[in-house]
Image (cartoon, rainbow, N blue to C red):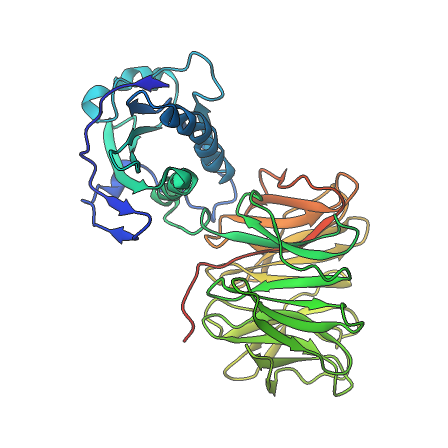
Length: 448
């Protein structure tokens, strides 16, 4: 870690504790290319993350610098859109004389083959608060792309780095939401299937249910404060709707099945499959568990509802044609159309955050169970996983750049992630037992 004095000239201030935000001057978005995350073939942008510049001799700063450098580089790399070169991974990596453009020798970084460069300064203020000034530069143009400044408790340094990583990703993709998101999933690490939540990268794992039974199908509310899921803790597959702070909630226990919940975007309502009338149909419920109306009318099985981001369409799985296939219902007109025709097993539909694509699970003869993506405009289907045993349960990151899923490619089912086009497939989590059914939280919105 290199020690230097640095200027407080960045144009954006965020006090984490008070969440006070001041506007920053705009920088030209023409300085760097925007990545089209819908493109099937992506070239990773080389980015350099040198050692931070910090002021003072405090042990606290050195500790934040060491831990923060590794954490920030990992966050940027996690997106799958950058080729990261960092001081943490490369001994002897070039250092910075300061964080402003006049203190940076861009020729050094051009020789490193990078196109983007971060400069981050740290100082411990007199009141003990951590101040972090962060800048992103276009190395080729030798120009500032964006500058941000954060202030808050030292214990919040990871959140500050997440915020700046989010800004870096936004500058090159035009989208946000990944780094402040969370995942819910099912794990049998205790010997029972329980529901857990964690940060976007599967750190900070927290157990939510302790039913000592079978808990399934976690679903996030639009505001990120509620989880709906199915549990057998009372012997029957019942629906539970639980607030994550305080533990208050609702238990829905109608005769038969109460399964596969899915929240309506922007509303305190959810859909779920219930069989209290005999057949397995999808119903609309309030967030308090009261049935509003029946959404599907089948003489067979309708399950796994999934709403488009605007709530105007609902994908679901039905066996009305003889085998499990995915259908789409227009919530205004009530019209239902079949989406999948290839293969005799298609399930687990998941809308992309922009509503343009649908990820789903399909079984093809001789190819096992894999994840596919359908373009809803032309209904073109692309296979995302292959030759890796069974792959299931796709869920989109809130910015649409990544898809988390379950795979048995290493034997036991575990959680993996890939870009929206199937590249950079990698394992997310290391826990005993099996991990399944990941569900990514949405960008938080208020209920109407």
